[in-house]
Length: 259
Image (cartoon, rainbow, N blue to C red; front, side, top):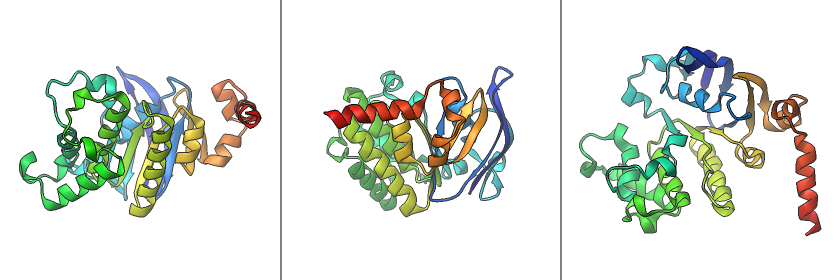
C-alpha cells in the first residue's frame, strides 16, 4: 500500500500542494485530475522524492525518507513530462532503443550496462515486445518520432520493475490506437503483477479507461477523491474545471452517434 499523510510541497518556499492525504493499495490505478497549475506534477514529484516536501509518504508502512535512493528506484519509477520527446532531443549521446530501455535496470545492476544478467535481458525483451518496439531496438533514439520515443521512455520506466509507477501524461504524443493499447497494457500489467499505478491526465476519457480511483486537485488541495465513477459524477468537478463536463461529453457522443 502507498499512503500519503499531510503532504505539502512546492518551489522557492511557496507551497503548490497542501494537506494531501490518500491511500492506494496494490493492483489499483489512480488518476490525478485538475486544471493547469493545480499541482498534479508536483504531487508526483513529491511521491518520487524528487523535490522537498513536508509530510509523510509510506510504502508498505515504510517512510520513503529513510530509503536509500537506489533502493527507492526499485520501489518507485516516474515517467515525467521532462522525459518526453521535446527534452529527449537535447541528448548528447545517440543511445539505441535497447540501451535506453536497459538503463531502467540500473537499480538492479551489479556491474556495467554490458553486464546485464539473464533476468535483466528477459525483462527488457518482454517490455520491448509488449510496447511494440522490439523491431526498432537497434535504432538511435534521436531519429525516432515523438510517439515512438514516448513508448521507449515508458519501456525504460517499466524496466525498473518497481512496485509503484508514476506517469505524467503517459499518452502524450501517441495516436489514438497506441493510447488505448498503452492504457490497456498498463492496467493489465498492474493487475497481473499486483502493482500500483498513478497517472496524471487531462483527457477524462483516458482517465476513465485507466483508473478505478481518482483525485481532483484544485489550487493545490484535494477537491474530491474516491471511485472514479463517483468523482466524475460529483457536484464538485464541474466548478473545478469551469465547464459542464457531462453535457460536453454527451454532445460529443451525439455527434458520433449521428455519423
